[in-house]
Amino acid sequence: MSKGSMTIENGRLVTPFSVFPGTVVIENGIISYVGSSAAAPAGVEPVLDAGGAYITPGLIDIHVHGGGGGDVMDGTREALELMGQTFSRWGTTAFLPATVTAGHRETLGAVEAVKEAAEKGTGGAEVLGIHLEGPYIDYSKRGAQHPDHIRPPSLTELEEVWRAAGPLLRLVTLAPEIEGAEKAIRQLRSWNVTVAIGHSNATYEQAMAAHLWGASHICHVFNGMRGLHHREPGVVGAALTCDGFSVELICDGVHVHPAAMDLVLRAKGPDKVVLITDTLRAMGLPEGRYQLGGLEVEVTEEAARLLTGELAGSTLSMAKAVKNAVQMLGVSVPEAIRMASLNPARTIGISHRKGSLTVGKDGDIALFDTELNPLVTIVGGRVVYQRA
Image 1: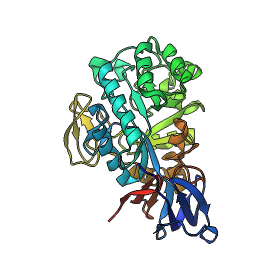
Image 2: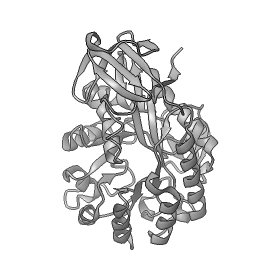
Image 3: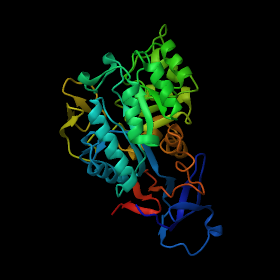
Image 4: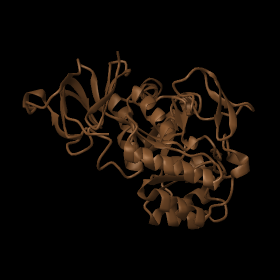
């Protein structure tokens, strides 16, 4: 996607720690000015009047499986385009497509499609790379991952994925207690890939050992993992007490009870919580039955579930996750936006160019009204969505 230039004025700038009136200027896709309107440079066209709306960094979702009818495992650029254009309607300017547990050839096909979409663009939110969720997980904590393809970590497979994706392989979720996990984690870290613990029945000690090997992130905390017990704190206990872990939170009030979400926020603070959606193909589409990794999923207004009843991803938007964080957890708007922009950018090592309204970063911007409903989404200085 070509880069654009524009001035966004008459809005309320949302920085990681405050909100104040001001203007943002983007030149050739890069933020060149953030500050008071009085001191803003003149002459950068077109000019977008924010009308008093919040001007925020674009939202970044590092855990998505599908949306708008497309799914990562379709293995096509077209599916990624559908996803990117759909997500942009809710203020998301960049996303990390996530695979599901599948055969190795199918996974490689998905990786190739993600690489193509990352290079050519989607016409909406930018593809940041690949999140490998599975197949190296614990069978007992598989959730909505297909049981037939679960297997121990393979360095050979990982090396093939790395050769196909290179630095676009940004995040891998695995269970550290299974045979071969230590070697896999250490190898991934040597490539500078972020490693998350997820779909895991690890004990507290095993989770903390994985942190020493290089794991630094927790996949959708509380879901698909050994829970908190006062004599065996498990993965959740390690997630909540170890400062070295950031944690993903599906902030919909269904995957995690609001009281448990409050516990996460109290334990981790707003700098270590990463809002995600874990969306399916059905995101943005009507209720009904859909496929996820070869499994049937029933999608209703309340939740997405396997036919056996287990939760299976969501149809949550990042904009709704931000609004929920404000309404359910009582965080400030800057804190909620931080959990949906700067924190995910830091998690996958791209905060030098995304995640905040900072001169020199990409011109990825979202505008929200006072109720945090999305109004405008801008990717690389170009409007990709505007509410009618």
